[in-house]
Image (tube, rainbow, N blue to C red; front, side, top):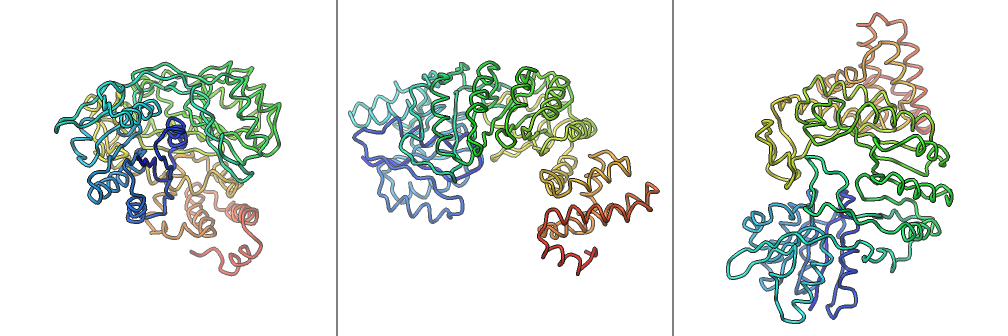
Length: 505
């Protein structure tokens, strides 16, 4: 029996360890098991060709919102070419609304719901022993006599039973690896996909430190922890961070998703001793509107969170990436603007704007009518509008997010933007909103792909802002400041090229 475990490369970090963990469940079994993560640049046709050439008996596709349409298409093609092959899909995308999914996708024979290791183990055993007792496999959905059967989710297994995913790999200093120290849904907000078994299964601290030591010895480039809210247990997170600081190899970076609410003063003091570049934190601010946070199931004390983040930035070298979300209940355009201004004012390394997605199985999707939500019926189920945020306003926010991304997140405009804010007293959101309108009104978006044009566009827009603020005399100083930023971020040859052409777009 030949089994392929496969997926397509994508940016969803929660899927990065899926195939490794699944393989560990059937490693050593009589089945001939192959694992393939196809590069994202491969075409659907190329992936299909490769799978058919493999002549597999069973093909398991791990899917998520980012790749679901491609996976569905490939699965359909494989089934048409090889009608006897068993097609299995797994992942959160098919773990909710499973019956409807199988009704809409007749090419899919089985679905693994929730964590798939034990499901795969029992499924392969049922095939090898010819017992075919699919009704007794928790988390399995299957077809029988033209009927679809969807078993209940399985109970969470002890995560410590899953082997170290890099046991058989020889890592190098170029590698960017992914790691999971606990399994379970610490973040249970109304737009998170939460499994029925809400228990958290954490690896013992001794094992975590031992496995992290392996990464440190190998001097890998980075280690990304895939779990949401790594510091759900403050004491546990403190001990792991303390271990990493004490055993720092001077090279490896560790990336975490962190709940800013839980960053107490003792933890901040610990982190103040970390080397610059050792830690990178991704933090959800989401909104500064308490009513929106409450409706979304976020019980955050936003003032405490903002204070904690400010203290962390003041006292440590930890890189912080902040995230805010547009489209939450009760969040109007004006309230989103306030959130943006407060989040920008923190001075985090990046400020990322996300449009809310109403994923399958989430409470907010079930209550969509309550808030007047209209959303895309296809993955990633992005919100189009709700009772508080009209569609045109969300489109404006998406445009502002694109432009904000061009001018923030690096040191390329480290002097220019603060100078403009200081000279004109403009609020960050008002500035980026105006800059965005200027870019789209003058059809300049196509020119933003060339870095030097970003400086020209910024100066061209600033001219109007300084004129309206009666600060025209400061324009020459601003030009010099923008040019300084350009010199600091571009090669001498590119600076000379810029100077020859000048400031005209």
